[in-house]
Length: 233
Image (cartoon, rainbow, N blue to C red):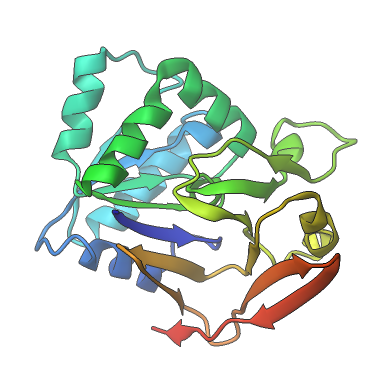
């Protein structure tokens, strides 16, 4: 099993300590970071902000623009092999996964995880993608005015649980109820919280002292909800 640093939400400044932690998981002095901004449709401002932030953290950054760019299969494989950390940006998780599947990119990421060739990280949609399913505002990111939270299903399933990133957002409260629709446990992760997985070991860290995380599971149709102890960094 590989390594995951799934960051629930927050901006590049508020999550700086979490990003540093993810970089430290590579055990490299100057890690190679591959940014995958598919969920934002390769938003150029986001790409620049990410590159500036991670370059300042002493890493080498390249971007894989799967929406705006055109790559051969070999070129994608070379970028993945170059990477010490693969960071998936936030945005529309449903769009991202559909696009990845059309390109065969999902299977490539699963192989990276299986061989433990790079740390897998990301924020928002880039947090959800590593789980089985995520509670998502993808309809909002499509630009509609009459939108609701939906399940982003058929994700990479490297973490066999449901997840709700940005769990502190008021409109995400229905995650607790709608988890009953699934037959797996769930995590409610507030902004500035990250799930860290290394092999069989999982822990939770936070870059803000008031951030929280919860484990939720339904037993006999009754919700059991427990706050998770966080390591503040």
